[in-house]
Length: 397
Image 1 (cartoon, rainbow, N blue to C red):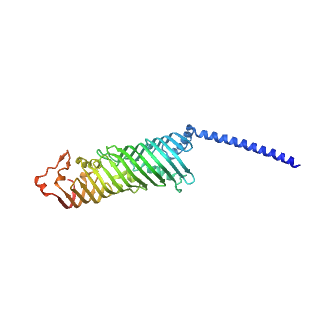
Image 2 (image 1 turned 120 degrees about the horizontal axis):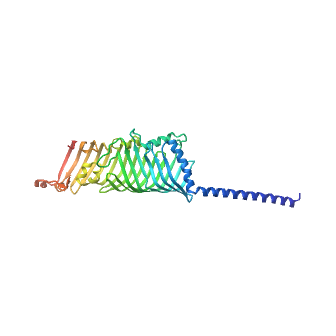
């Protein structure tokens, strides 16, 4: 065969190969394009998710539902009506709408990085049932027990920014009796919870975040108008750093605040099982706000400046290096031990006064219950500054 004939034969073969390649590429492009378009259909996305959540619901023997799912513009996920129920068919988590930008996803490393996340009307309810089981613990135990669990691998979820809009949070103990007055830690109900969470990182059993401009109302009437703080949650511990809290009438500066329980289930009995460690820098404390925790104090309608260290549980509370100042001439340097809170009338009190200083001019301005004032004899005003050192041990009665 001549070189010319060989060249023509090779050219025909190359043309056929190119034609087949182009045809194959075209078919593949049409298939992938069609698949992409199908995947963009919200109803199809919702169908796939419903199949997955249905399987999980059967394995967990509880309810996990998603109303509608949309995956938009390659990296934007929208979930409507997300509902997760616990073992007693009570709501654990619900949100009307979740909108999240997906920055990266690594299946090999079990990591997900989100950009901005918007949560509309989310509801979180941590409920301890009559058997003492916290619903969140029930889910965690279920996760540990699933055959395809990835507990031996490190997983990580992070988000740059989360916006909370009209959220609700509950911490309920079915074994307790509702308090009639003040904040009830065994039946805590927070509403109108709004704010921003930044730098969220969830890695295994540790969660770290920064919260800004958080606001909420408790069902008792107690209201927080602003919280800025760093938060770390790990193994039954809730740690706050550089906390600034503004209530209706109080301004608290708390560089360090730690809430520690033996497990996350301890928070179902907050008063007795959660140990507190709080360091207060100069903070304005109002009896109006404090009265939601110790109702008797609310009747005095006063404010003081406070600094010091508080440790222990609510039921067994200790204060050290406590410094309190009131009006122009009154100050108190003391240590204290309270046993029996929040029932203040039945609490046993030790109060060690290192130094107490006051003046009748401040004493006469104390607001007693019923908006009454202290009536002092004229002779008292001639004493001028009064100081005292000593201790008090006993009940308020």
